[in-house]
Image (cartoon, rainbow, N blue to C red; front, side, top):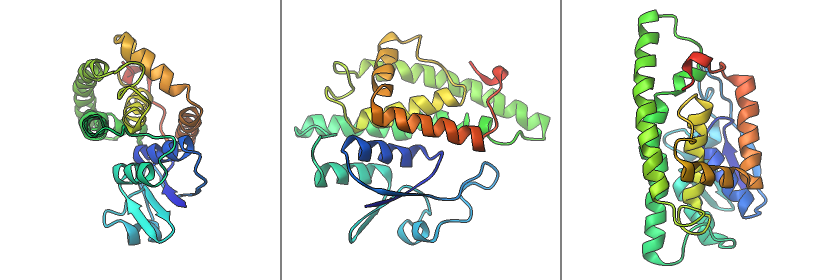
Length: 226
């Protein structure tokens, strides 16, 4: 297998965690990325595989896939041990919904914090607008943390460790790296976050993201941190 990934791609890093959790050997190629130019120049293999021109792209023999959710579900079907999705249909559907919640619901306010690691906007009016919008986004994230905690089923979101935990961890971790709200106000969520973060596959990716930030990102200022 081969994975086209990106140093700060939340979605590609999800796939990296799943591959490691399953112990699957996979060649990884990091595509070009900078905070000023984004993913430029676009990698030709990524452009050929994905009409959106985005990572992750996974190649497994004669099969090429894009979209992290599609890739994670394929990996669980093709390489089922250890499982990252429940077997029972309703439990499986609930788990997929939680992964969707991480990718689409938490991502919306999270995206409004991403300017903090980009070069500072030279327009003071625009900087104030971005800061005001980020403050609202932080409130939305804090409220969502409570909803996530309420969906815990024992130690993890779907009973056993799953793709929902991987996706949700990545969204919450990215909120932390962008100066968003901490998890300390929601003890159950904080305990879950620490539990997931301690897994070797997760810890390795978290460390790589932090290293990529040091190379590629503007540090989040103390004033920007909640």
